[in-house]
Image (cartoon, rainbow, N blue to C red; front, top):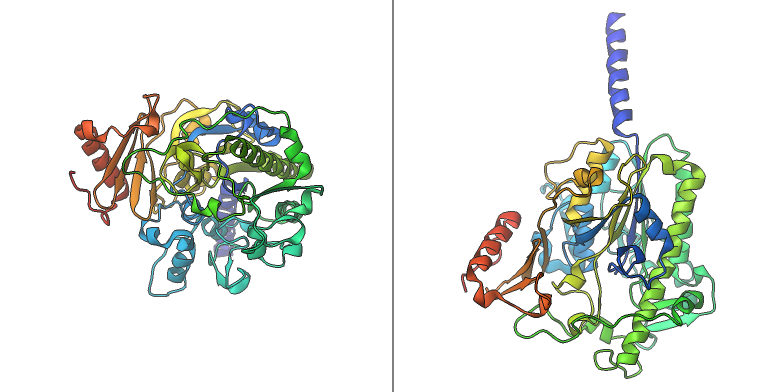
Length: 480
């Protein structure tokens, strides 16, 4: 009988350890194209009470930087804890290219963040746009269950398409089931409808259903809910646009196109929408109108965030759930004469990050430390007492959760032909052909004035730092 007693004791010890390690749920709210355009992040003209409430109870990071200025590679970095430089030429298909390796028995691919939690006893569910395709599937309409963007990650990955009929249709959907087409692509609209006039209303509603179901389960949960707005087109129920009818929104700082070699682009994604012949780069009234529509989309997303947090409270799960709110990248509203993302300027790369733990101290104090998206995976492992996998390239932010005055670290980001690193004072950008940009953020001109030519020593120091942090040997780091 003794061997059974020993076995029972081992099972009890192991089970107790697992229970201790998995005592907290995780809820992550993804918001597409969200720059730090929030009241609690300094934009006092924005109506964002629900996100501000999370920030007031958690830890906001005012200098959080994503690792790529496009949805696909940015979400890759967040969801894997790795930069993904090997997929830099794949753009928004980076997670699908990773999936090919996951499905190849001859290739070794590290688990993603949700897969790591799933392997450690969590129920994992995604709703909406969490990976690049809402719902996380491939195929012509992004609804082929045989093509998973993140194999082995989710117990369920859900995208309610409602009257838009497919995830692809919902991604850029206009109101009440209208799907974007070459002939139907207005860049702004406001409709006299309810919160389910756009896909986010359905995504949030499904998220509430999943919270209800998950809290009844016998395992901790890892739930990711991805909202689409304020992604283009800037369409909202009119009541959110009305919030900004008499609000004064400041013009873009440094709206001029920067001189010399940069990662500036012609805002092609934005310009492909129907703008009625107007160009905000030279039409100040149109630019202001667009900024109000963007703000309205932020408020619309904020409403859904409030509903999600309220449901968490109603179920009682708020007492035992870590909440993360993350913007997948920034968005230029005219800065550097850009409307959109895809550059390696500050406006494309800085986005909100808020982490709330119901047991944390020093609540509501903003951290000004530089952090990056790859840090979230090791942070959540650290905060739930799961082991931090060795393959993650980020650094746990738990010390900053405990003390907002803790020092941060440099942040890396990339596009297909350039890589950048942000330090406390400088942004250094290295192009594949050897061209460089260096900006001093203590200079009022910031990223309008490239000082690389006159500071070769700083350029070399930051080039060396960038290479040591990324091992990005695919680029030729010349001394030009």
